[in-house]
Image (cartoon, rainbow, N blue to C red; front, side, top):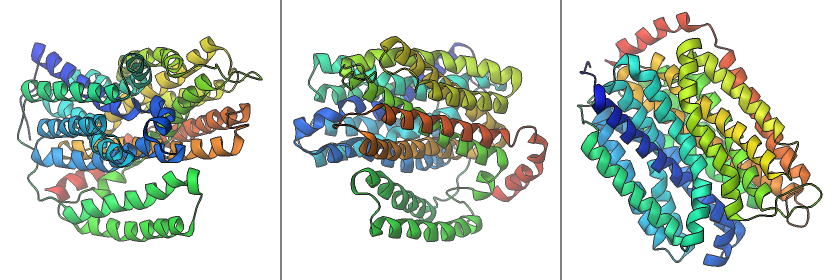
Length: 473
């Protein structure tokens, strides 16, 4: 479906609005993380139960990202951005008014549905902007994930110095309402690219597979691997095999499996997951090294405010990384750029193991990891958009965002296991951070390898893509 591109000041205003929506949505993922240790006292729950305040949002986000991408392709991208932001606002209000863990978990789960915003915003950029301006727009919108994630810790630290913990969620609600209003007013609504029926069976089954996989993973740190977890994973594999066959036969599949298995798209999803693991491990390491009592060369002995100060340079690096990635992708190609970014994530993660008691060096190394991850994420959608048909842009980007969410969930499991097995007198040790950052370095190398395998094979994609375009009509 051809549309007249938005240009001039309208394009710049629309892009700024989409970027704001992306930052607001990604903030919901990390604003709460520095507060987790305090919820044990505020709500009278155990540390393991408090961890679900973060996990619930990740699980909801993993389901919501591909779902909202699919719905955006069918019912309008701008409309679904507004709906996702409304979910964020309502969830924030519920969380702000909560006085029990279960009410807070409900609010955090509703907040998780906003994870689809960035994938939808990327699809809007592709469908409404001129091709010449698309790389820069995609880099800016995709970079908002790193920007919002990086800003979460320092902003939470600042808010906690002024308000009770409820104020963090009231702030999230207010920004979500503002962003939703601006998107509704500024971003044009255009007819969806396809009017096919909703694949209810495929969507529900896909969500079930994710939950059967991720919930047992999230429990490893507290209960290990009981028989029920093994049963869940076996069930997920069995149902997954049936689901793939069902989606291949469906006239309007929730996930276009033929498209998803194309080399550039599959490798992009794998890279997104492993960079997501490395990024979240570095983020977790920053929180713990900042708040660990300094002894034997490990820890800075600070609190939430110091954590925010340490993370602030990393947030600024995320802002600068997005346009830099776009410039590099325009000159040397998106896949080369993503591969270089993943290698940088590996090197920067490894550097974090060296010094753990100097705030300047800790902040610098955190900056390098966050900047490299944001650089990688900013260039990745250009690969997807080069291959995916226009009518599937939202769904493909949604799946990529989901893989980042899955990576974050896996990183949470890794961090919980490492902390439980290496802590000394309930505090992280040097071995804790060696494992956290070492695992991040390995994940960066795996991500780079997944992308590098397919370098130089663009010409092999055209026949498969042409076949997909014919069969989707």
